[in-house]
Image 1: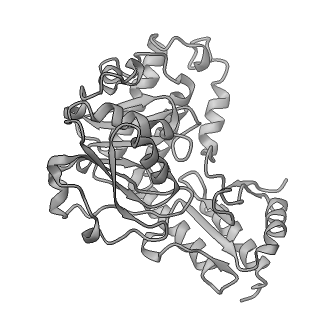
Image 2: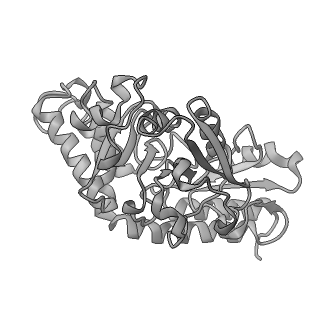
Image 3: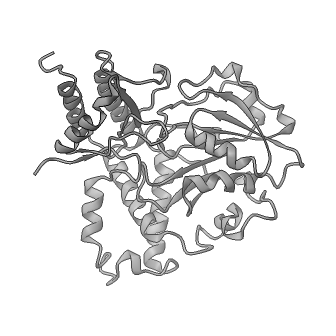
Length: 365
């Protein structure tokens, strides 16, 4: 059987070890006589799963004690509404939300936030992050928070802000890290809120992780639905309503797997090695093109284009025949995209590189 490597941007590849364990525990979790899908979310069995997942994620990201970790529903996209609904209640009418626009997902965030507040696009580019010194931020007294998508899944733009910028000291920073969370070491304490949909680098679709500083709880607008009020969710240990229990269980297995692999620092080392290997093949000549500035190329989501796009269908057919799946780019931008998340082994990237070289006629070079 051909070895399959799934380059989907999400829902995405999961570690085989995790899938194997989940399969073994499907009918009977640890002698309980129940599948995790059948458990009461308030029962001792599931509470032990939830608490382990929360504890392991806190350890992996070195989340400070003054931050809460919430396991929510709705996906990262829903947070575009839930963030303003939860953070604007303590701000005077007319407060402005600043955005760094670097691609499709930050664009969606801007559109959604505009329903609740005035928005200011402090910087905009979908191929390179504008120099931070040039960001036109709202004066701190009038700013609600600064929102950034630190890895654009569709456009392949990745960055980390320069925290030496003195303007950040007075601001709440909100980061959508959906497609690169747990792939690089971050300082959680620099952010007010971090959120991430699970289906890219954590687990199956249906879970959204929110990491929020304690002092930002209890700031919701009166119209915020109770089930999405971060303080109520935090006060009830993510159990205010029935959470996505099976998704949390799988996420917990992924967190255990990450710890066994060496943690986030090791994932960052592997991510760099995989990305360097793939970008080198794309840059070997002009047969393929990546249109993102080198300093902002994503290590997780690699969009690329064939110079002769009439060959796109042949490229995808050949890739599928070799077990290289889900390489078609997002419909909004076209081309190709290889998502190489934590669970993608370097062998998969090497198989893709071999095919890139073969299709470009580089055999033996």
